[in-house]
Image (cartoon, rainbow, N blue to C red):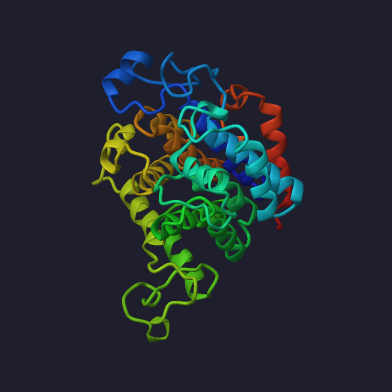
Length: 357
């Protein structure tokens, strides 16, 4: 299917909203037998959370706080016309931190992540300024909101990396988390710009490192077969290693290699891990997006049916595959089933229209 830049951008955003909402009901089941008992052998659409579970009280098709924060970030980008960190921080102060109390089961979407709880305590209880509230949580919370920033700057990798990194460290300061989050954003930006998630993608990303556009340190020449003496000293502010940029193509090779199979594909959660940390979630999303690059439905449903932190897995996968197939390649039933689809469509297309050709 031929897609346009704007269609791919809108597809990435809608894909993320859909992935988040699909996992609202069956979120955080680490016991797969319990998941199957509550939701059957195969979840194929939106479901409501069971009483006593995470997000209880919300309806099928609604967003968790991850989707809520993505929409907040998206509104800031659309209304300001660019990434405006002061505006983003003001919205968090006014719209989120006034509605949470530092406990998990509170706030929009029914659950507040560890990273946002830590930021709330530092900002509200300890009255620290923005820039001094980030914590060490290793989840994908920042990636889930900054994917909108990555879409906005898909044609400008340097701006993408700077904005995603700056927004990430507002809540998560661990350098590995930041590096992997920026790398995910860079991958998503490449897909929105029309590239494929394949064995060549990491080479393109490394070219951007060598040109100075992506802030990662490298000592290898093109092809990774020798040392580049001119790159021995990392640039100021660069992440220490480019490994997060190499992972996507390695996983894409595995996904396309007939000798390396994960069957059924939802068991990617068992291979890479079911928990929340970035080092479990990003590899699983890359695998599903590479394997089902032309099939949005299969990609997100396998992400959801793997259990554990399936909401992050489905949201990150949905953004990647949404970019690959475009908004027109997403089955209409997934768009129609979202809570207030006209609002999501309007925001997605408004941001897509801002991207420079």
